[in-house]
Image (cartoon, rainbow, N blue to C red; front, side):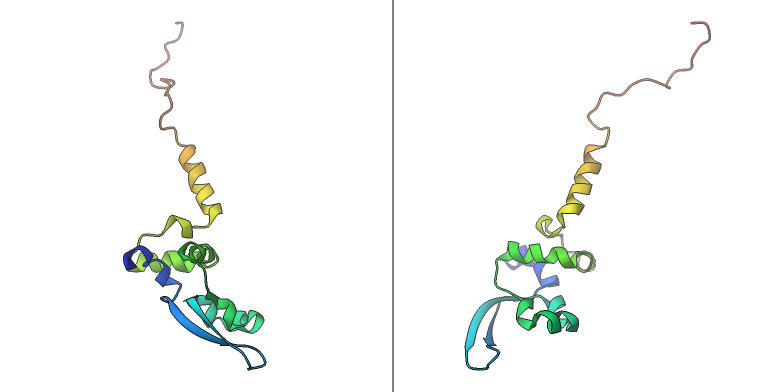
Length: 123
């Protein structure tokens, strides 16, 4: 089962239980999810949004959606670790470019013989 989520661990922590305290310090909430290691270590992000925003409660597919924002790092780490990228972690714009390039190939179309034979003058 872990093998199916190897790619997630390039950006996210393993499944973990965390206690969050309210701003006034009176209430503690326990949550189960994954830390986005990139967001958690980004001081600008933490100051702007708070550390709790780097903690994701969603499913694997939700985490892969978040990976879109860190795709270059994800791609690099998958390549280094020889892990296959999950198609759901690839930004949609990039998938559209790939599909357009694939559809523009001439494979499957009937070819012409134009330019294959020399033109004989007067025929």
